[in-house]
Amino acid sequence: PTTLAPTSAPEPTAVEPASLPTAPVNEADPASGLYASYVSGLGDAGFLSDFNLEIVFSGFWTVEFQAAVVKAAEYLSRVVTGDLADVNGIDDVRVTVSLGVIDGMAGAVATGAPTGLRADSRLPHSADLVFETRDAFTAEAYGFLDDIALHEILHGLGFGNLWSLMNLVSTAPDGSLRYIGEKGTAAYAAAYPEIAAADPGAAYGVLVESQGGSGSAGVHWDDFTFRQEIMTSSINISN
Image 1 (cartoon, one colour):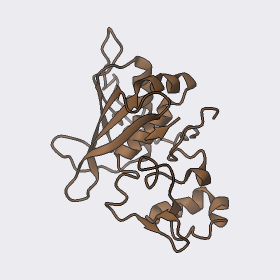
Image 2 (tube, rainbow, N blue to C red):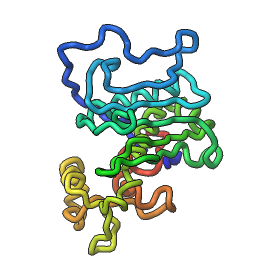
Image 3 (tube, helix red, strand yellow):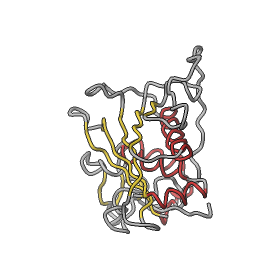
Image 4 (cartoon, rainbow, N blue to C red):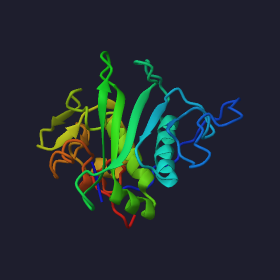
């Protein structure tokens, strides 16, 4: 879960298709302005993508809260371009999002996790995301609710939560916990060259959080090392 420091995720460069829908594909209720559900990557954000997230809004919502989740979902449809095989009518991942109580105010702001995996690839087809209601209002007021939504949807897609299942974490010779996926390790060196150059274990993998208990340790990038990266475990509200 995310606790109350990411910078806003950079906007990728989208390739605009020749033909976009002339009317919104996702339609909000005319009276409330709220969506019952929303599918990303279908043209409503100005681009088309083969990777679609079906966001199902459960329970109480505000227009502003929904907009933050939609922004995060559309961002992921921009940067993830591969299609996944449909499962039980789901293309590509269905994320059920709700507001509720996790551990009270000023604790975990939100939590996200896969709830259903594809039998062959073990990639998720379903996930749940829950925002702590009172903390969500604080996050929205500070303007980083979309960052939290992005963070938790990524957990729903398997970031951290599926690393052990897929044998993607290991203890390095120096005793540090590392994510050892080949592409992630290469991206570490490319995106953080100064940190990686000073890290004697950088070639082994990416430093993973080892503090903070089961909700933080082993499922996030190391907070001390990466500070404001979107997939560390804590949020800096002065960001």
